[in-house]
Amino acid sequence: MERGTRKVEQSKVGPKGKVYICGAGPGDRDLLTIKAAKLLSECDVILYDRLVNKGILNMTSSHSKKVYVGRESGDPTTNQMITNELMLKYANDGKKILRLKGGDPFIFGRGGEEAEFLSSKNIKYEIVPGISSLNGAAVYAGIPLTHRDYSSSVVILTGHESIEKKKSSIKWDAIAKAADTIVIFMGLEQLKHITRKMIGAGVTKKSDIAVIENATSNKQRVIIGNLDNIVRKVKQKKIQSPAIIIIGKVVGIQNKIEWFLPNN
Image (cartoon, rainbow, N blue to C red; front, side, top):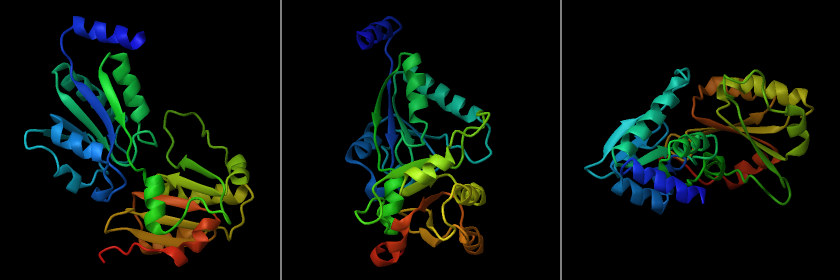
């Protein structure tokens, strides 16, 4: 009934557009979903993030307006408010809007926050999943997140929590004991802190860890080490964001099944 009521309320204030909160995948444009490709050719406005492959943007219709709304590290938090207001503005203009995000919108992509905002404004929306860098990075690096011999559980964390939090909600001790494989998003700047927390939680210093830079793209680099030396290795290779971190025994078989060789 609530959804039906919402439609009636919209009709009273005139026609509104629709927003598609959509994942663009982890980097390789060939990993874009068919539905996302269809929306790229149909939507009037594309609001896109920093990590969206520029080749994907070339797939847009000639009539569509492309607006960059990506947030760099250190940018003001008001950036999200601006994005919300743009979605509202174009929707009230009756436009069909594609809110395009790297990876999947519901895995550290703020898709839930944007859906809440649109719902509060009685704007119609759909959510379109995308291949996350969670599995995209792992697969292209040759690291199975699960394996019958090494991993029966996976946990995903953010290495960059909201600055509005008074304290971290990550329970390092519990995670270290509960999960076989740990995947960390946006953790490169906090790598030293992360390794210390893991070791402090009882994980051996020799535990395998991988850092994957620019996953699934021709710029992909994979650095393999252990909790004791990975910070030094990453610094030596000058690894930069975006990067995914994977910790666990599954990293130890990467050299056996690595298959993706960039630029080959």
